[in-house]
Length: 116
Image (cartoon, rainbow, N blue to C red):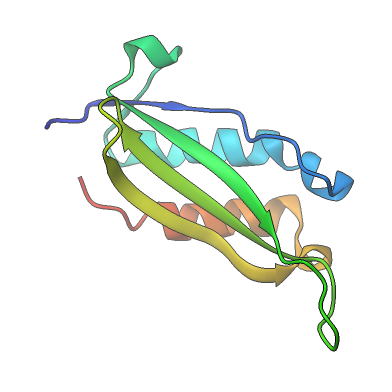
């Protein structure tokens, strides 16, 4: 299956208000990285060969562990539902360590390593 275009979904909101501010960074950085890799950024999902989903996972606090650790998973799925790539742009990091610049750098590094 040849994938030429990818639609990047807006990152969903989370129960952690601080993470909502990163939605545009996730979207815009992902689009730029995919374009740099030679993909076309589809403007609507119906015209895309694949879709990039971004999901925040929040580790629940447990006894003896600091709260607020997050993981950002980026998944590219073909239109037929086949998973093409799964990238953890942020892995079990304290949410307080994130900034827009740091998140953009992590997405560029991790998503930039996928192959066509």
